[in-house]
Image (cartoon, rainbow, N blue to C red; front, side):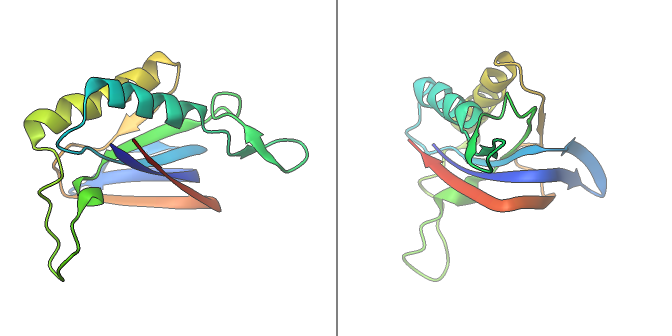
Length: 144
């Protein structure tokens, strides 16, 4: 499982011109599921995302957790994070098929919500337009 986590001041995802998910301060999470991923990995990923201390404290140091910062999460499925670029035309054979990816993607969302976070999402498999106002910028890749 792989995620690209960006600290944002705001972010949204739209489908066919309609906003389907929107947050203010928090994390935009692009989440890719590998074909060999498991529920344990999904739980681990949610724990990492929810515990990533990259918000600034009173001294300007990245030391505050998203929970303590009042952060929200926008989690968007992103199978292209598992692109094989050994040739100029990417292949995606390492990305999980929907029957595996959807339950694990939904598990990460559920685990984050269970930790008390407001979580907005895109729509798995849809053609989405994602926009964000990055803060910092701070962008971290998390992989298990």
